[in-house]
Image 1 (tube, helix red, strand yellow):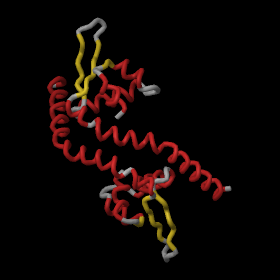
Image 2 (cartoon, rainbow over the protein chains, first blue to last red; image 1 turned 180 degrees about the vertical axis):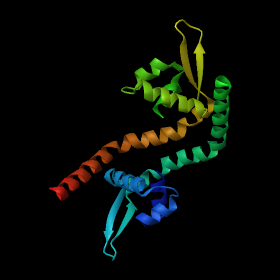
Image 3 (tube, each protein chain N blue to C red; image 1 turned 120 degrees about the vertical axis):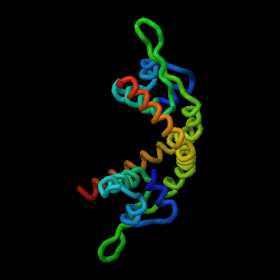
Image 4 (cartoon, helix red, strand yellow; image 1 turned 45 degrees about the vertical axis):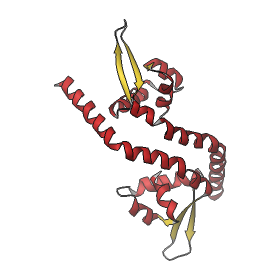
Length: 99
Length: 99
């Protein structure tokens, strides 16, 4: 999903996407982009450069996912603190029982 | 996410949820409900029945996720056919190259 967000701004090359998705591994990003391409969300274009470059671009289908995804992303951001609090309480209860 | 949708109607016991989520394994559902409980999305109540029953219920936090999730779910349903078409094309291209 985050790869789609990166491509929402403009078409990008593999390493440009990788740099923007801090911490993503080469292998995970390769697999993610391949799955997005297979699902018709992005197109993959081999550029006639030397060395050869590969550019990824959102398709209309991929772009149409932006709005529902933005809703989920906004929810996650606005509830992140509350979730972390619930996790701390849950873990503390777990330790109290094991204690 | 689908476990949340099942609980949106009313609180339910483990096996009731399992029956509604066709094909989900005991292990996956147990882990999913535990993660939802840890994130504060559901509460888990041990019922004083014999044998002991466990009931899961949406919290206000869990219920607040329904609307953004419904948007994503609706997008998925309305684009499912198009995605399957793109997948077939992608796979056919893959075989043509390997062929």
